[in-house]
Length: 181
Image (cartoon, rainbow, N blue to C red; front, side, top):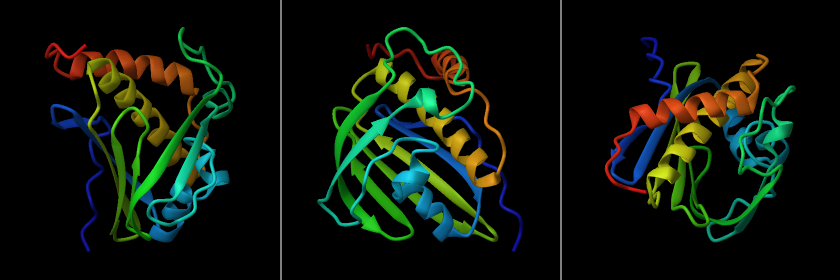
């Protein structure tokens, strides 16, 4: 099988309110699936929270971004040291797809596809309510997925908040200023 090209690390708008971002990860697919579904592994790159793998099951995510890297970098104004969110699983096809209602900001799907000894992860965040949300989620997903790549590859990640702040400026340049506030 031919080697799959590494996807563009930046998220792209596939619709006015939909962000898609991809990462190529070391496999196998079952290993990557555990990083999406098991709280202790997910906590290392995104957020903790027990997840019963059943459509309709609630998921309580707990973000502690200061704990993701050491050092965490400089947290931007307006961001607390913890964020909690109640969500619900809307679609489940282990180990290929997980979709979740993202409280207050649309729906997120995680799709996994084997590519030789690697796995293509596609994250699609739909129904983002405005440009500020698009920018924050674009920079956030980008940085969190960079952490996931580092964790599954055994590499030390860059400070979370410094990367997030840099990416927020980059997404502001990349995403259209279409009047969404």
